[in-house]
Image (cartoon, rainbow, N blue to C red; front, side):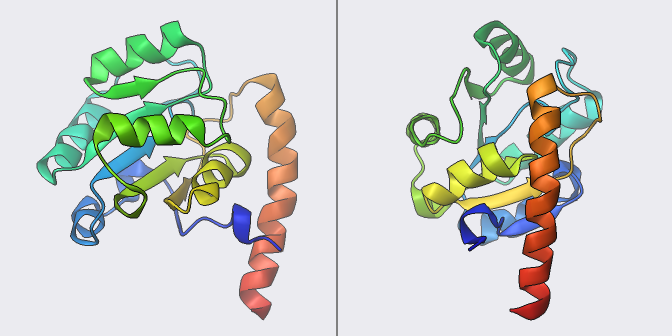
Length: 168
C-alpha cells in the first residue's frame, strides 16, 4: 500500500549522501528539491558547504537540476548562484517537471535520482516515474503554511512505512 510513497533511501541531509557510491551505481543525474532540502525555506544564500557539495557531485560526474514548486524568481536566482540547471513552478508530484529535468541533464530513468524532503511531492513524483528516490530530513522547521499541514499527513505515512518495514 505504501510503495508509491516509500523512498529507496533515507538520509539526514544531502551531506550524508555517498556521492561516489551513487555514481558507481550508475546514477548520472540528481534532481534536487530546493527549500528544506538544499537550504531552509526561502533562504536566498548559498552556503560555502553547499557550494563544496555541488563541486564534489560534479567531481563524480553527477549532473544537477533543481526542481522546485517555488516561484521562478526565487529558483532562478538560487540556481544561478549555485551554477546548476533548474525548473521552477514544477507542479510536483506531476511527472512533467521530472521529465524536463532529465532532458536538461541528458539522463534517463535508470540513471536519475530525486532528492527531496517531502513524501507527497518529491518522493511520490519520483516514484511515479520509477526514479531512484532519496528522502532527506527537512533542513529547517520554518516552512510554507501549506507544507506544515502536509507534514502532519507525512508523519502518519512515515509511521505506516515503519510498520510495513517491521512486519514485511
